Length: 619
Image (cartoon, rainbow, N blue to C red):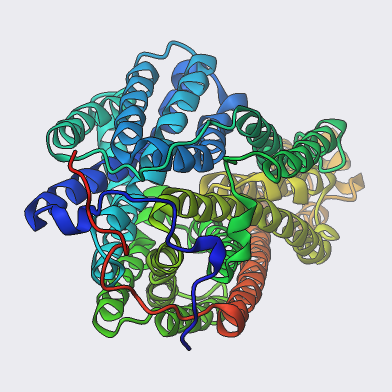
């Protein structure tokens, strides 16, 4: 349905340059290409580093800090996004994007020469600070270059960049790490970044909003003080720091306090970092809510998919990465097709809703997988999930940009991105709790009938906590084999002792050995019969006794193998139940997002021009 724009986002705020009207189309495409290349740098860095982590840990002996290599980057990039969005509205996209690329490249070079895990984590913060400027500015750039009606067809290119990076990143990271060294997963950013810098310096105008405002320093500090503790509390390892630990509770208390102070300050300053007036606009408010829900559902569902692929289907980490390509393929395909369709028909709400319907079907199908589901069945199911996810990012950006004044494009785009990343952190944390809780309960339930028939040494190996914390297929398989070895050892040790005594009793005629075997309750019946039916040395009885022991050893190994198989089945069933439960909750979040869109997202007609203002100046 048609709707008018809220006064809070009315197209006012003074004259400014209408770049969509004055720039040649070829120049727009060069600028867009430079923005996409810059975005590719930040997107690639999120995926390429993962495959290098084992080598980094090996060089620095830093297993205790390895999670911070990713967490530090996430914290910095999330906290700074709204700040850069505001700054780009004030000073223009070009200087902020140049700053972001330069800082990102400096961080990349420093990461490459890092000599310790602490240094690497510190330099990853610098990378994240630069990446936040790149992503927030890049997503806003199309709004400066194209009118909303023309902008739609280009919006699909941005999620495509993330899709391509997610496919190339793990492969390129593995090749660079294996063939050269892990340092090159950071150095590879330098030539790409320099190319992007050259394009931007030579071809990109300032893309300034025309507004002049003071920087809200207090709001900036309070925003960082709110986001960083909350993100730390959500992402820190809960096996080390429980939700109820003083550190986690203290971080949440600090984050909530800074959030309250931030809201108080932002409601009173003239030029806030995040204008609370934005939330008076229904399109923006709905976009933020949907971004949080979609970010949580997407990140939680995708993050834990590899656990199923590795621990249930038995894929290697590399194979699991390849198996998820259909997800990204569907994501890239639908994001571009939906953008083209919106550009043709001039409406976005129907296509956003259609995407969520497809995503719901995909999540429902993923919630029905079993431990016997093949990787090919997983592929087409996650392809549907990707198809559903694709339209959300570009079309939500388009919707809120279309409802905003040109002077607020950077702020609304960055804020939507900020809340999506916040949703991803929430999704990862909450779904992590669901996974841990469900997996522990399922392992205890499925292990209970197995433990009753195990020797004490093997019972100690069958610890649900150990299996819960084993997130790699090799670790789980190793524990299963350890249990099998314990069972075999417990059964074979007395048989080996009996074989030695039988040789002495029936081979050498040792009466003491004969008496020891006959008095032992562990001597198998067939051996006892051979001893009772002979006296002294008896080669034929010895041969029959050894044959009986061979059969007993074979049966012991078969029993151990059967128990190992039972444990394997129990583990796979437990992981499968845990993962499917995550998809059930992801389905619920997506259904809620669809309801919010259907009921409250207005259909603001796409403008044929970028703004009502006439171009009045040139750069």
